[in-house]
Amino acid sequence: MADFGLLFPGQGAQKVGMGAELYESSAAAKSIFERANEILDFDLKQLCFEGPQEELNKTNISQPAILVTSLAALEALKETGKLNWASCKASAGLSLGEYTALAAVGAIAYEDAISLVHKRGTFMQQACDAQPGGMASIVGMNREELGAICEAATSAGVICMANFNSPQQIAIAGELSALEAACAAAKEAGARVFPLQVAGAFHSKLMSPAAAKLAPHLQELNISEPEVPVIANVTGRQVTQAGDIRECLLKQVDSPALWVDCVQTVIGSGVTQFLEVGPGKVLAGLMRRIDRTASVTCIGTPADIENL
Image (cartoon, rainbow, N blue to C red; front, side):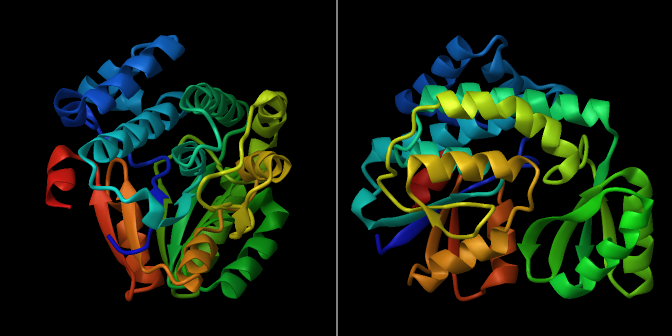
């Protein structure tokens, strides 16, 4: 395998049944799910495999579920011997996927990542419950144009650009009144607007209470130097030192996720082949909008691994 980068999905990739085939076909994947169930205070495996979808969609459930399924897929791939680790040149994940990206390259122990992401999801859900908010995907508008719209909408409440998913697809997040104003202005300017079915205003200042609760747990986290460069969401740049990793993970909760910048950083280093490891194919879809010269192979099932 030529040089490649690893990509890990974020919240929204969850789907009932994810990981079930991996569990049945791979001893390494099975071990990941069993370890997760021992760490958590609920049956994550059953929720991943059997649902219900409404429960799996909850922020405190979906975040560890996606991380565990992604790590299980990675371990199942490693088990086959098909993965040439020496050719892995970068690791990146969208939002919660950054924790998976760090765990995958040895910066965070799997057990710590599972526990921490469950806490992160719990604190974020609590912030959503305390301060109602929402998100919308804006398509067909660049950063400068949408930034001006968000700035104008701040008169109605907290609002910001939250996820830079592709050059022409940016998610905004904030208080419902401000979100409504920004969406109306974006539509009037000719953009397409898609409300997102999420619990609240992720990657905005409405998540600052969650960041405050997560901070002491991040301070206690044992972080090692990554075996492979990891790209941080909040900077779009490589991060290697433990202190910098902690700071980026903390800021990430209530700051924009610069996914376009992350991908462009890796491509700029000469890597054009990627493995999207975990449930769904969201990141492969975004890659087509970021750089069509790059290729993404999705690894989420035994069949995907067999066809690699």
